[in-house]
Length: 392
Image 1: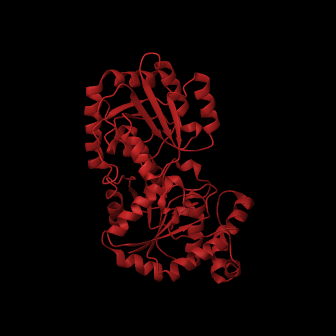
Image 2: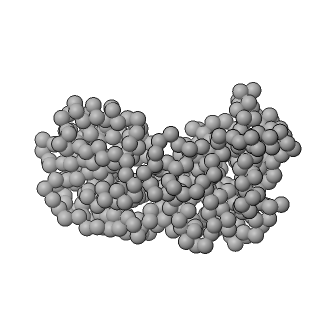
Image 3: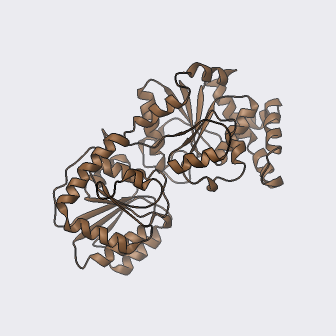
């Protein structure tokens, strides 16, 4: 198959999830191309940032000219018929018609069989408008709670070939749209050949690690507070890998507790740097208020780290309590403190949990599993009809 991945604001740090799927699909002989809404404001540390990509914005004169043609008129008519949002929403959708024209032209010129849209936000509107210009096979992926993706969700999804939820909750949200479109759950995976297992030798300090965007919702403050309560009793080190708007707040919190000899803000790293940080740790901690795939926890478990994770998203499907780690209530500093202390006092159990975490990753988190599931969901061998729809 020739597949086009439509990724909003590519390339970004979190897009490594999509890149792993693309790598796996290419290994299986599929031709995968990239398109995006626009370039991101921040640089991306990953090697795939140099991958060829077609950006739909800014518009070109040809896009604007063709938006006034018959195909653009069909897209505009669909935009004018949306049920939610009134005139302002319709005007916003009309402004997307040139992007839809460009996307539809790309699908035709590159002979794309299927477009895999990685959002239900604005890029999903572009996909629906492009479909109105001339039908083609596309799918939409929901990575988080559906109520954060704007209006007219059913309109965006009802012409899709496939809807994908990366968690059980996302799948239920998609089914609740009532579109009649096939819905599948396909989780993001980890390349086990790169996130290799490493046995940790017990050391004097317990080394904690979090890999996350520096954002208030990631619960980094709660972990720092728990560490602050424990440093008088245990030798701890805490490394935070990532960048984001909450960095100044985090720096002030570390300063207030006098923890600069304990906490390291390592900044954004590429995949090799993340693997290095995981191999240099004893325990993964993710205290988010909300999560979807929690890919960091999956990566950490693959390298042999036990984990403490907030009870959000699919946490209890990823971690069996007391086997690969522990699940705690979001924002519960006392619970984080107690679990971190437990790992300090039980190095043998910590090592056993790390080995169990790797076994779980091998069983459930292999990056090869998602692309296989996607191909199966796209028609159970019926790839020819998909191509026929794309070129009809």
